[in-house]
Image (tube, rainbow over all chains, first blue to last red):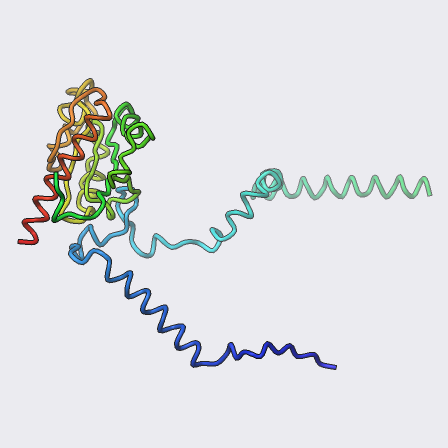
Length: 116
Length: 144
């Protein structure tokens, strides 16, 4: 049996959406009109304020996708600090880790076999 | 003082160009309940793009020159500059230091000077009010 919840209101009526859009546009226009009209276009007054620093080019001021995970990484910082440290990027280190893990696993299996 | 042309609240942007923080602490004191300039409609804002007045403290160190000029340019017109403290006026204890590019008025035009090391909060308020009066005149000229 399929259960359909009916609210009795047609929220998806396009007319309502158009009215809502118009109301939002009027509010936006109201605030925009209250803005500074006499600023110097094409000069520093039209630039982004970066605490007085020179504004970098558009291609250099993109927010990377990784920035969206800032809170995630910040919260788990203690975990990542420990995990990232062994990841040196040097193949020799990874081979040492591999041999160490294989050796420990072999010892465990050997002991288990002896006890069993 | 009657304000007729410039009827908005006065928004002030505080810019430190190498101050020892003495003047900055006095500016903070101006905002505390004892002096409470916000009751007069004087408010510190976080961006020069919203400001009417630049409150500059400290001598201008060489690395701040381009920043000071840029922040001055980014402030919408009409704008005024108030220099707070002896360092910004003539170098103060940093006079002729190797790292200075000069007092503030050698970098950007200055309208009001508030001397002192550091100036008392009353003096800072007086300086800002003087700037407000001048801004009122500028606004009247624009209207006329």
